[in-house]
Length: 413
Image (cartoon, rainbow, N blue to C red; front, side, top):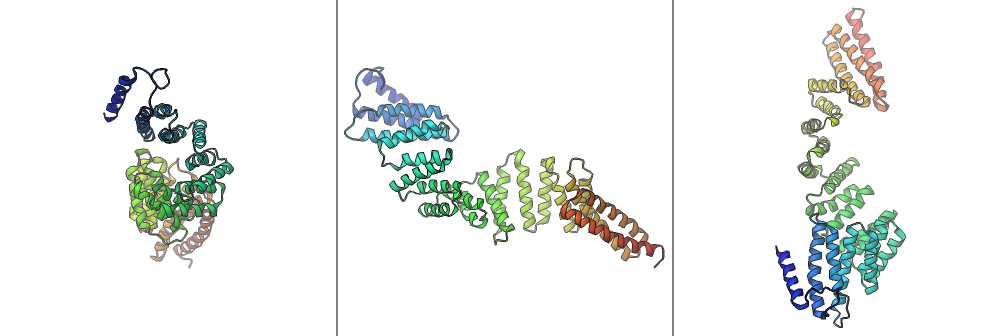
């Protein structure tokens, strides 16, 4: 409503003073002040629509058209310098709007126009640095333009950040690191800088160092799923590499991801939280999350192998055996996962057989050793690497136990 009133008032202003004449038509010449007023109104409208387009509530072409109209009013001589100043700001926003609309050539043209107007304005060089260094991946040119911007604005954190990104993409890790740090020293609370530096550290596998920067960004971007996911992974990877991190804090991000996820992807975050619970030693909670994930997406049922082992760790043997059987009998589960489940069944049955042997129930022990042997043979048949090696070793062990039990049963020993 507010915008509509502004447009209507501006239309009345134009019609009252100049009939139907526009800036492109011949007619009464506008005064400098009238041009300034007209440019400001259309600039305000264009800027508003640009912000809406960025938020997904509008389109960039509408904003570009309005900004160009504002630009047109600035094309006149002005001894006060106000039109020139306005034209620079409008040019910058037109370039940015084209960039967001993925019309890179048009964006480049307007950034160059800004440089022609004022080569001492770092923003034109910065825009070209982004176009060449980030969008077109012409790193040499991108570096050149960003360095020019840095000469003109040496303490500008945004320029430092842009050049750091170009260095990062070139694999110049030390240079990128130093520039990121320098930019953050100037803008320590900037969410974008913290996010980018955290991501940079994450990608070079300095996970524990990445965490505080990602968390700083997450304070202001609480609904950024990609950021929260990276933060959760950083905690997990740091823990995995032996770093002293508080995994309990990571639960906050896992919980938030589950809240934010849509139905189709929610299961992934249940899987991730389950893994986190595992690392925290909360096995019952891990089981609940793995089972929830499988319930939500049957394609995730390989997680049942984890569930079976967790039940076994908790001493819940009946549940472990039932879950392992579910895995080995499922035609859709890959053989390598079935091999792990067969291995667990072998372990469960071997322990049961040894317990029967010690109770002198030799006939039952022999039968149970046979069952364990069959399970290990399936694990050896389907498995690879460590699983296969382990299964073959257990086959030899079970055969020895079975022989002892059989001799006792037949009263040979």
